[in-house]
Structures are given as structure tokens and as C-alpha cells.
Image (cartoon, rainbow, N blue to C red; front, side, top):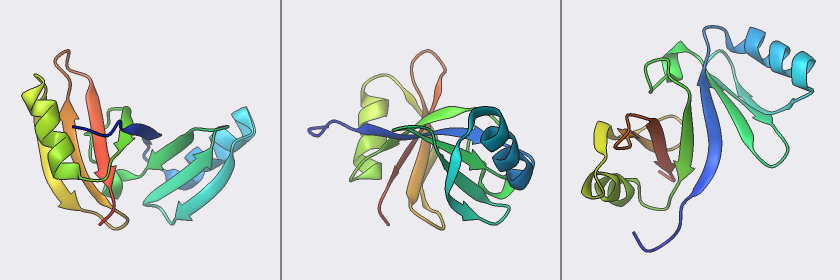
Length: 116
């Protein structure tokens, strides 16, 4: 991979997006940047986005994960595998982007996403 990826968000799967938005807003003062019903919400965490994924958008199986924004999801996933990681979910088109899920060599889950 030639271009450095950036962490676009930190994904937290939640059972109830609306309740999670209320919690993180009240507890930490995070303001919603984008809400897609009960599917997904992005909260402004001061330079980082906290992404709240409802059950329909939970691609990690309930595990929090750093999400890396890249220009080519398939190439980034191949680089993860070539570097000793494993693919969990191959690239798939979601409602807002293309995404894949992988694990690093230590078992940590990462989401790789980019433009459709």
C-alpha cells in the first residue's frame, strides 16, 4: 500500500442507536454529525468520529473497531492479509461506502472503508 490510511472513525456497535446518541451526548457532550435512523450515527468527538452502528449496520459482530478510510478497499484488505492479518468480511457495498472487515495478527478487528 503506497498511501497512508487514516482512522476515519471508531466504530461502536450498539443495540439502540437513538439511546446511544442520547448517552454519548449527555455523558460526553458529543454532537451528532449524521444520523441514519436506527442504522447508524456519527458523533463529533473532537477530531475523531464516534460511529454508532445499530444491529443492521454491525459488520464486526458486536466488537468495537478502528475504521480505516482508504481509497481502494480491496487493495487495503489485500495489504492486511499480505502483512499477516486475516480477512473476516470481503469488500461489500454498504449504504454509504464500500467496507471490509479484517483482523490484525493479534486478533484485533479493523474495518476498512472507502468510496463506492
